[in-house]
Length: 274
Image 1 (spheres, one colour):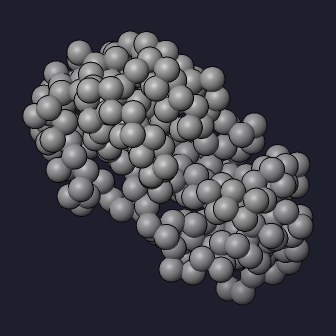
Image 2: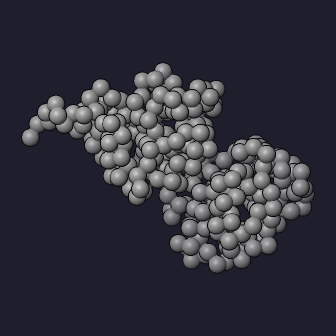
Image 3: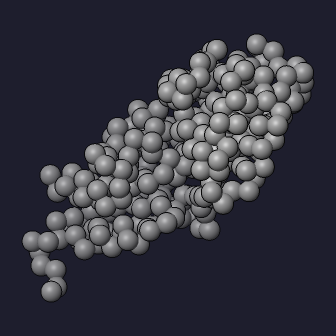
């Protein structure tokens, strides 16, 4: 049965899909309602269960327990412990981290550290990795085994600062991503959001949010992008973990009660129809 005007409730809207997986499934659901869909995957996410680098890094940390752990994201720390649990290494990793001092980048990181049964020794002045490293250098890292939990595209400049200060550095990247195949589509998406041309945007993974912000930062357009996402565009998130980096920037997304893609689509459609 062909769609009639009563079913095309999203006609005149433009919805951006940032996912790399199941993107057409999302897009077709919006198109059936009459929306124009823009596809701009912001990342290609490396699945943690297939991440041999993370496996090797985790083994190394278990064999050489750290003195200090620097936590950049709460969901990253949770993801690492979850990965270790799936690999049958959670108890060994917890034992290795038990004697370490934890320092966190923000309140979400502090919450994750405590929820996982650890205590933190300090919180950075700003929610950026540079400020977390500033705190670690202030405490002192010379001769210490330091684990830096990064996410997405690691900040190698901050890693170098720790090494230059004498830290024996190990890094873990529980949520690692690679550059999308079509980076121009992402740059065009950023410009379209700022111009007010995107009615709504969907995110199904926190790294997709972080990557979009990272590319906007490279183009010196992050403040404009954040303002547009707060004021012009309806932002939809699949669930609370994905929402963390949005909320850290003062963006309040619509999200379903259950963290499922189908539920997110339904919630966003209802929001736009209202």
